[in-house]
Every structure is written in structure tokens, then in C-alpha cells.
Length: 164
Image 1: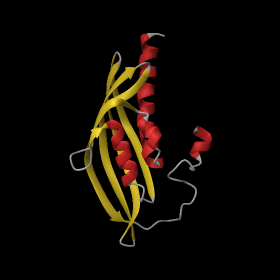
Image 2: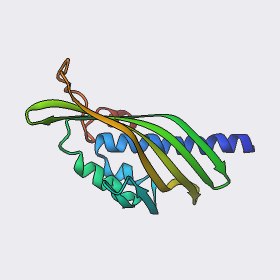
Image 3: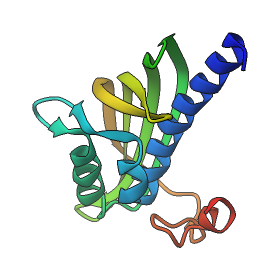
């Protein structure tokens, strides 16, 4: 494989991990979330939320978000620098979460950036360290247009029938 093709494949593998993270927390899929981290990885989501083993942040998020009604993470502006079997990335994330609070339907939006250190071990790219930077957030009352019944926040979501 040429160096250009190898770099393209490596960038795609890292991007796929970033996307799988979003799917994991949106579907509360702990094993999928664990799969993007190396066993010795570290996650820093701020002293007020979580600092510790990488896989532990998936446990924390999925447990804390079980009571939410809907969850949607979108990732954009993914920049990746490669250096052999190591890489760095920055990706912008917009997380939209819906919940009931004191009988009201509210929506929380969080705009963050993930600043990540990656390594390829035994042919698999995985996270070594993530710093999640919350740039700004908001919470507001919302009026839903419809009741959405098809999407699920678990493995019963229709996407699992297609993607596995």
C-alpha cells in the first residue's frame, strides 16, 4: 500500500472510531463505546464530570443518560494529524439531549470539542487520551412537533438490523 493510501486508511479508521463513539452514547451501547479505547486510555471530561480510565467515561455517560428521552451527537470539522502509528485529532461535537424536568419538556445542547491522542496497536487504532472541551451549552423549554416512536436508545434501534 502506498503511503498516501495508508494515510487515507488510517484517517478513515480514526474517523470511524469517532463516529462509533457518538453511536455508542446515543444508543447507550457500552460495548461499542468501550471498543474505541485502548485498555490503558485516559479520559478528561472536566473535573466536574469525569477524569479517569477511558472506558469508564462510557460507563458514566450511559448510566447518567439512561433517563433521557432522546440523544443525538453530530461530529464535524474532524482534523487528524498522523505520525506513523500515532495520531492526534480535534473534532467538533454538537450534542442535543431531551428530557423531562419538573413536567416540562426541555432540550439541552452542548457544543464541545474532542482533542484526542490515538495509537495503532496490533493493527487497531484506539484512543489513548481524550480531552473533552465544553465550549458552551444551553437548556431551554421545547415544544415537540411529534411523538417519535421508531428510534430507540438501545440495540432495538432499527440501525442495528442494518449495521449490526
